[in-house]
Image 1 (cartoon, rainbow, N blue to C red):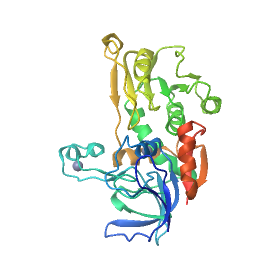
Image 2: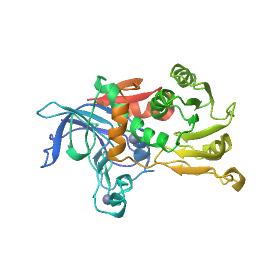
Image 3: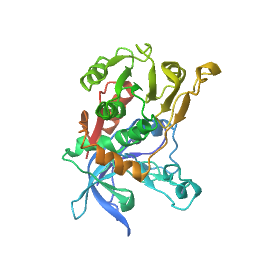
Length: 318
Ligand SMILES: [Zn+2]
Ligand SMILES: [Zn+2]
């Protein structure tokens, strides 16, 4: 099979030929139909999130068809958990001490075939084409976990309007929240998409929202946005950091956190998150905006994500 392989920090993925992997009992062999690109893939390439034992096939938003049954399933970032540690026992498998993640600890979906633990695969409902379903598996799913942490916040700020935010904006509108979208300064295509998806206010991350927000989610990997978002939320409001890595957060005075503002991160997903979100997604219904790339152009997709040339989500098609 053809695959795009990570060999070391700072190096582009390399196109290789590999044997089709053989599933062990409890694993599924999947023909990869589409695999979404995620900002986490950039953090892996840059060494901000560590791959312990390269070479590794990245890609953790996999839509595949089971061989030979052809059932369609999705494979998310959470690839395996121990089921017995304190976190797993408490229903927080997203924080499992021995968790293994798809496309980091386990070979992922930038390949024609992959294998996955069947207990961590989701059936994909709805009639989305494969490429449109792929971004639901991380951008959508972990984004949804972040949204849930905002409680019943009506005025919701989204800092960074990429793959996750463009999905969440649709869920938030469906939940009758008001969406305030903050993009990179001057990112007209992202601002146009936010407006099209029903944001009631669209601006740059260096602008103030026109009214106080009840909660904000930061998807941009910029720690400088943390004090900015804290200033934008009301007393008692929540700021959720939705990414796996951020640049350093500048020091800020306690008064910005004072009055019971909550600042927290969101990490990974549980299988319950996946089941809940994938049941909800066709009811919204979520429509993803995707740019597709052939497998061999995975490095171009990653470069486009890095430079901000991309609007919506990028998906690789093997
Ligand atoms: Zn991801
Ligand atoms: Zn565990």
